[in-house]
Image: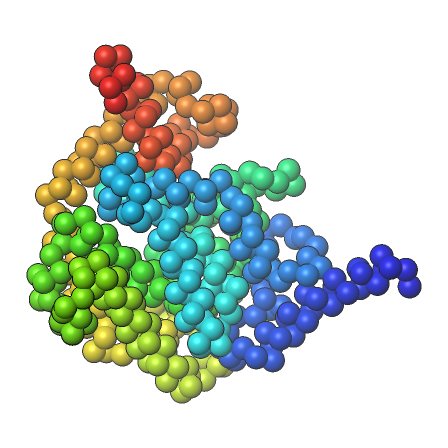
Length: 408
């Protein structure tokens, strides 16, 4: 055997060893990379990376992932360097999801890839703009960020000449099917036609998707509190209306304000994740793995179409819901936030109308698509992919007089 043959053999064993470790050490309820349903377009297996590790790497190198750095959730990008963006939020979700998956002996690589992908379909400026685009696309199958995320990875990303999209595995792509089934998303034009081959049976239930769903919730609750207090929009003492926060905040009295805030946010994450792991472990221990093949009417197909196994204890679930209600009332609907969101929506509406009249002003690859695709969907894709900064600059360039533009 030559050195090249030996190395080649070793490379193949590396992936096989990783897959064997998954079979040996992960829970019977985990999703194994060696059991993946595969990709839209068949590819050779990699020599030393599992299927889910390859998906993770493809997502990190994607254009849509890089754009998350300049897309925001609550605070507009130009407000300061401290506040979270979609990218920093995604990385925080990855960390929390990996920790939960590791503690429950689920597939960390799959959880990581799903977490990296989960926000790719978001618009600039957050959920309010998503609602605006959905209205503008009425009669054209609407707009929803999960569906748009699938459209990104299946159709809009274009790093390969052999096929459209990133050609991710079925399992990672299923993180986008929270609201609609894969078959419906394909029918509406959000998924690749090649995904029809996955319609032969019921959706494969994936607990790692449940992990990412809850990690997302833990991350944005905790970090929106951090950003809200830092910005002055939230008063931490007022937050004590929420029992979970009060039990954390009051014992930290006497600490410097910044230290106290950071310690409280850390403890908030820790308590939620600790409760989630403990409650989920009990459910997993008592769950029959053979039941994973049985579906129910669960509203989230990708989260398993089975009873939710990954979840908090009922008391923590109640407190987490109370925390969300507080944030919606006092942060997301704060006058300063809604005023900025109203401005963002006005910008997006103006840009949408302008590009419908002047499609030649879009980037070249979008102009080319107008010849073969519905104009409104192309404009929607173009705007949904914009960063906050690019959308603002485009609006200034198109609509503001030169004198104002110079001072912008």
